[in-house]
Length: 508
Image (tube, rainbow, N blue to C red; front, side, top):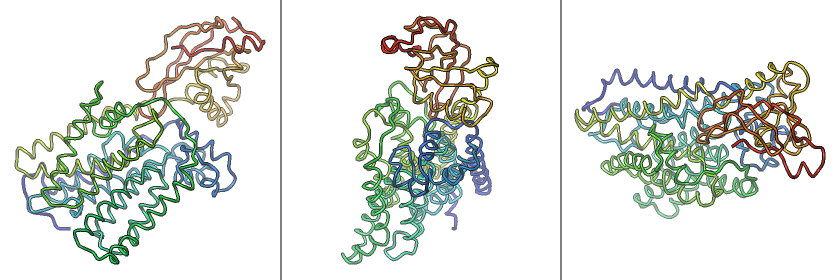
């Protein structure tokens, strides 16, 4: 690839190339560091689902659950003998590290970027894409945990890269790479369908402008899109339509959208989601304007993959159960478009170059504290908490109750099952804790939820005192608050009536 004429640049070309290499290395390092620590609920849940099956084929035929991301589940199935959180996350780390590299390559190619003589040079375009994709908190978060999102992001960008390299030419051999990557992207996570929708829109626009005859159009469609379309249809009717929804804490659309914009671009979170959404829209519009100026038909891809496709599919999702991670693929394409806009701005003169550099640095700086918090607090400290209570109660069995049986019970059971030092710990569900007094009570909180009071009393008259608190990063995992039960015998009754009338209650 030859660089385009030198214009106003935030850095020299040689420095841009060096900065690009350093950025890609740092992006991979961040994801590796973020993969440390305990598995969190959804990762443990996947392992629990896999424990129910006896052959790899049952991942697709038996585990009809929205927590079963097929490619990730396959990786975990193969890696089970290692029994290591980091090893379980390693394939996602590799996929997540490929995301900024693929984005830089796409930005440098020029076809999808609509580059012309007034555009920024190749290394600068690649650098802007690598910085935004490599330093986005959202992509670091989901590019470092054993879930399907990193796979879907990387495969979506690989499909886009193949479309760029092949130019969507009806007979291009790159169509096979596009079709394979787009198909696997859907199997990685259902959100991979947005890449297919964008590719369909882009190719339809391009082939329409080329005035292909109906027979040529049909052959081109079959070559590029038949396999992804059939895979998406088979995935929906064979798996997704029958999948059980695991539930979760409630998130409404607009607050989630504001947080999605903030976490993706490094913007401040705001009480009114309008502000981060408006800022993100302005950056997307800047990228779209660059494509319009260059008369690039790739605008069809971005419009559908970033905006139209999620707008169509969101109403079919679970009401009140919308999370930022469901839109990681759309956010990836959105970041690529924003990078296109900032790189184009940098070529408009010294003042614009300074403004583009300042915006790039500002967005990166906005993500840095969140990434630092993820590296420090990780996705919770579940094993550390259980080790602590085992040390504080060195003899006899340790009985634990909680404010939520499924989440806390699953995490405790997983950690106890892995570590013989925790074998004395036994979890009491809500019904059992009404009949038998626990020694400890754990309350969990997600990001944004207030901490429980340091002391409390339940309806059985038991008093609780906060002893330990363990943090967690904002998007995955939850905080744990451990309370010592000061008078465990208060109100304890073995009668069914007491069990029904006065179960332990969350300390809120």
